[in-house]
Length: 130
Image (cartoon, rainbow, N blue to C red):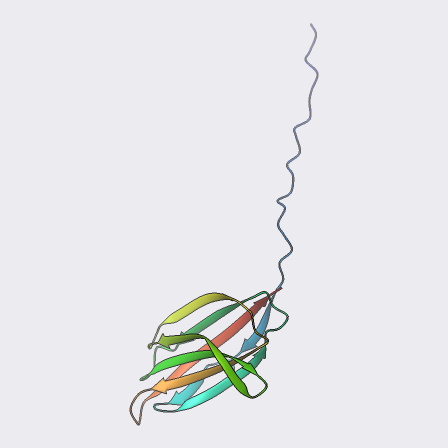
C-alpha cells in the first residue's frame, strides 16, 4: 500500500511591523508637581524638532483642590509663537493626546485655577516618535 508523501506545514511568516522608535522626551519630576491656586508655572521647554509626532500623557492627582489649565505653546527662543493646545484638568482626571509636530520647541505651562489655599498636583509626560 502506497502512502501519500508527507508535506511540511507552510511556515508562518513573522509579523512585519515598521520599526517605530518612541522616546520619553520630557517628564515632570516623579511624584508630581504641585502648584498653589492662582499661580502659573513653566514646567519645562522641550526640543521637539527631531520628532514626527509627540504624545502627551497628563493627569491631575486625586488629592488636588484646584483645577489645572495645561498650555502647550510653540516657542522660538524666548518668543511665544502659537498655542498647540490648551487642556483643562480636574482632580483625578487624565488625558492622552497625539500631535503632529510642525515646530521646533514646545513650552509647557500649567495654570492652577483655584482660590487661595487650594493647590493642584499634576504629572506631564511627552513622548517623541521618530
